[in-house]
Amino acid sequence: MSEERKTMVSPTGRLAFIKNLFVSGGDKDRFSGALIFDKSQDLKALKAGMLECAKLKFKEEDIKSKKFSWGVKAVDADDNKVDFLDGNMLVMNMDRNGTFGPPEVYGSNRGPDGKLEKLIDGDLKAGDHARAVISFFAWEYQGKKGVKVNFDGIQFIKADEAFYTAPTSDSYFEETAFDVAVEVSETNENATGGDEASDFEF
Image 1 (cartoon, rainbow, N blue to C red):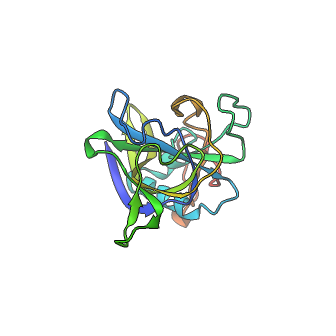
Image 2: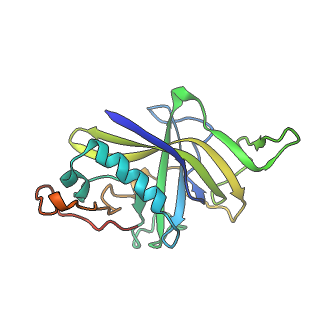
């Protein structure tokens, strides 16, 4: 079961894992991609959106648990499976149900009609800078809980050096690698339960 929350435009990051950005794939027929952020970026709005979504579905002790899965995950500095990732980066994996069709992908320039130009497969590459229209989902499945990121569109911002890597990111990150905790209200500040809390920091 999942619950969709408000839609927002993500911060600008670098595109990665775009094999299924234009063409759906996998057993579940989904479009996917990822944006990579530097930890020094201002990601307050992104963090607030995920936390708001989580609070509407889960208890405080669930959200504070290190087992809770977030849509943005820290990169293990010792992970050598993807050569362009390092410990100063955060990865936001994005997903789209294939039944909705491919995401809309736009450039940064407007045509004579005043509308943003539409891009097709091959117009952008992994490593380019982009931002996305995203929605947050709170989900629970077989005892696991978390917030995931769905996306409706991508906007190319500027080109950069290409990334070359494996086609998916799912196997490279632990579900508990990205630590987020909750601001505890005065009435609940002594609440206990769940697993050990994590720090609410990117």
